[in-house]
Length: 379
Image (cartoon, rainbow, N blue to C red; front, side, top):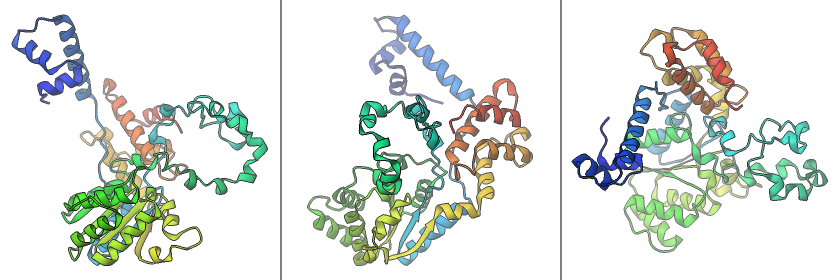
């Protein structure tokens, strides 16, 4: 791999001027410090090159094929489509331990009876936030009810979980795959800051039209630009959008004749329907919808094996999963796939760790190695 002077400077923490002067032999500063930083950089990059790499990429599974079919039909018919569900997101890959969830544990706070011991919230410090003072026992979970509080209301997506995605394994990658295949597609990846105006400004910007003005102006600019073009607008993490933004996209679809696909977590469907079905005008426009969780259950093991094959190296017989089916079984069991409802993030971390470990002493991939490494992953 080739590195520019500016890239070396960024990776060593040295200034580009120092690197340039050092290479020309005119640097008057502490040469030992410069050489130590450069040697450390070379050693680190060399180690990366030697590592056996696992790269997530788009895999055409049955589930992703179904999603691509919906995207294409919605595009050609200038319809509205919806893709929703947890499938392909997998929580373990977010690294709960890294976020500090694995420390004290609910058991320490007296939640063992509810089975929260394995999660652990010490990193956030609920006691410090005053939960103890509120007295959960006094309020009673039964009284509040998880349904009453509503995780959708609290919003794991609102906390940013949905926005992380996972390349090649979730709905986000399907959208990116389709957008990269056709020039008449606009992909917008929403986040927590997406108000109605921000969404319309982004759409106008992508369309190359004026993105100044109020919501009405931005809507009209989008309609004019999209009218009779046959284009498709994809919006990922659409569950983060307020109802008014969803209604604005419905209006753009109706008047411009452009296709729209909304993708997100399960609460997206609730946002489209309304809690009491009050958004019938919006939801009635949806032509096709895919429930990823239901579809995943239909193609569970077949899709798992396809993704596993894509993650493992195939340059030697020992690591070729097609030749050693027992390895696939070991990965399936170790990734806790069924219990986690399709936890591809955990599978990715497991495959990455096993492949790297297999390169130590050229021991290769084995059932024992898979089981050993899986014990180090957070469930």
